Length: 276
Image (cartoon, rainbow, N blue to C red; front, side, top):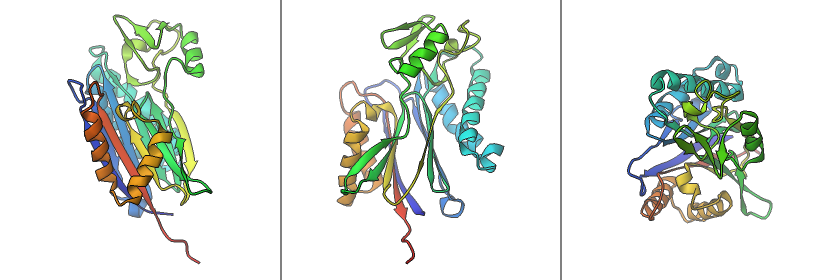
């Protein structure tokens, strides 16, 4: 079993005029409860949606009756829908902004991930040869994805190149919280174009899983998970802490010309020794 989770988290504004990334941590009672929740939100069209979601979505999940019953996948999906409704009430048609959301739940020896948008999570696994491999735990919701393209076609969405086209503006992802002019009833279509329904992934953790990464696209624009996982492994081996690794990456990438907002969260799992 996981004895402790050592985390690091760091942000950088990059070359953008505003910081629209947010994150949330809920792992203070992990040693007693066995539950830890980590979330990253990347806002667009303003930071209101990401800020609201970071403060409310984790609470909706852990306070859900489905969560208390142990149905974690259903609890996360329900909470995404509830948060989207809360944002709709808050904005009341005044904002075109939205946010990605990637939620990582560690519970009962599993890593459960729900996401909308292009903030991603990756899990490291050491193979039989001792090399670290990357397991993608999220999905980038883009118009070139076959399933997303079919959904958009069925919803009569307007798509040009890599964007969904709305009244006066466009968006380069197909799922998000907010973005209500791309959703019913404002889009006047048979279904939502930008969906708030998360993709869910679940993985049973073992001691072969030593760490995980949760980050906004400001990090993934520069590295694939298969590139980043071995790099992080080497840094941890040489004694770098999760926090120093996050700080190092966000500082350097944030100084790169044209860089996006960056949020980098690194979770290192400490496993209890098995009793003989």
